[in-house]
Length: 357
Image (cartoon, rainbow, N blue to C red):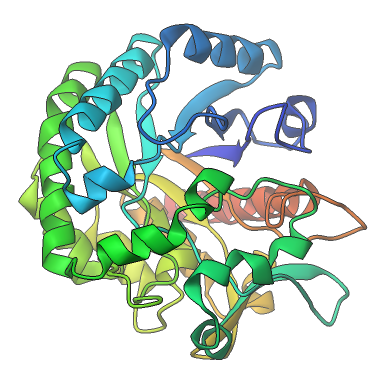
């Protein structure tokens, strides 16, 4: 595996490339052109400039998170043809610049849902949290208003102003879209882009829905072992793979995370490793990466990745806000650096034990 950190670019991220370079074991970043809109073509010139900036700091671009999918593609509208053509052009430009992994999602309207961005824990840190009763009490188009005060001035991924301005319209458009139709629209998209992925050896790594169940009545399909295996079989190409996010799949306690990892051998192209603390099955909060701080056995999750021969990029995810840091919720420096060190330590121990037999 290759340890990385997500980086949103110097104009959007409080964490610098110089700081990332100083985290032991971190050699690359997972980045994006954060100011692009879904459906826009990423020019080769901008990709080249992004790569040059990262490389000047002694790092490299290990992958992209995300090239966002336009809602018209998810909805299967006629306009998807041109939008998929644009996506193919972006993939071509990434391939020409020697970038070979793209994380994306196929979630309707919201990329993720949390009801709190700064829930205070007993140790004084603050974390992202989710409470189903709070969601049930909200009007969907007012969802962001309930958490906007805790963004620390950041533009939150998945909650961009252009998207939020059309939330009610999007809900109206999705009201008759079933899981089956969403699967069909995903299949159509993947079949269209696989030739360019084959040409440039680009691994498409779909991110799970978060949380892993329907929210506000919207269809959610990338939620469990059965559905992800269905997705891979319906477009049976090794470049059609997954981002294994332990935190997102883990929102549903019925998901056996190590078993899921082992069932996806050869198709996990990217891994997000993080922990959650459950107060009940409908109320959870982000935790430190350490197993004892949350509800997951992080050793078993990392060991499963090792056992399947995972060699792709991996990153810590959704750190706590600690030591007075002010940053994009979940994406500060300090706790993610601790997470990277912890995951590297687990990997080293597992690797040495395996070699000793």
